[in-house]
Length: 424
Image 1 (spheres, helix red, strand yellow):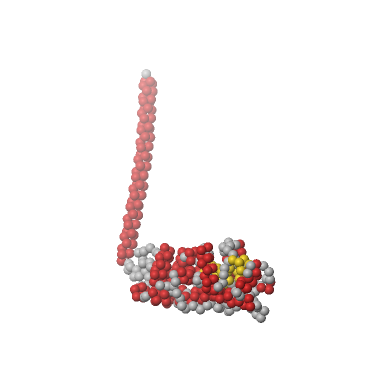
Image 2 (cartoon, rainbow, N blue to C red):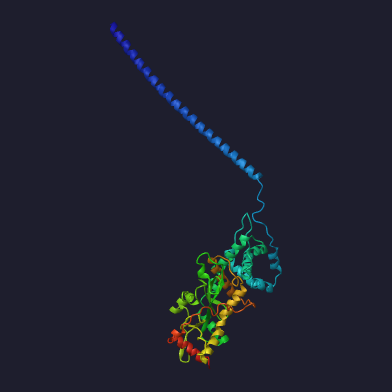
């Protein structure tokens, strides 16, 4: 009996010990979870404290920067102020004669030109400086093209910086080529061709002529690459301007950029004008019969050009020339003077072409093209220009004649027929 009681007591004690162990294990788990929770709270609190410290320091730096900017001396000027009273004076006081003398066109033509170019020249206002007005840009560019005055003088005259003056000229020249070239220098329409034919017939008694062709040298600074190719036979560096001119001294085809050493005939043979005329896509197929020969529309050239069915040149001069050939040469030279007069007026009006052009070789062609466009613009608006001398500097230069090689063919028959027609 006593042993049974002891066994029961031991069993109870074991059960109590197990309960106690379970309680201890649960308490240990609770304590561990509590420690982890407190550690996480401490970590989050530390992160919040660090974030607050960073925000406070950032605000302090921003406040210091704002205080520094407020105390810093503001910029005195964005660009050097320059007087523009001269430009304002001439816009108020100059008459059409002064405008035409200095800008090569009357006030109304100048304003219309500004309207054409304004879409490419107008700039937005900024907080730093006011944009240069389009009218001043056009005037500055015309002054440069007309006088070839140094940019330093132009910048003082128009109240802009030196680099700004250079940029303005490039900007306006580019705008002229982009917005006006296709309108003012283009292949004539059929109605235009008729007017040109009538013009040459009325003025110089030469039928079926739609233009006179020639080339002239534009003096340039020696290029950095292949300078020898640009050194012409007259002793200076140049590029060629080949042009076809109508009876009113307006250009309807130009080819610019061949080196000055290149002969006219080579530049001509590689031009789009030659390719189109040879393929029959340039001139209308209109003929008129003279001395039993059907004569098509013609372009007149000098001895440097080949004799073609659509391109006539003079007979070789000398003792062997007949009366008919002499009469033909005289009539052709009179009619062909249109291109010489056009070149003379072009260079006299825009003297940057009369003197050496110091622009980069890649931009010279754009300047020459812009001057040709402006020439046609002025001529179409009857802007007279008295200072004109026929451009003879390119005549009799390195001519190549093929007449001895060409004794048969329609081009010879056409020229002979017209030479006999002129004797009547």
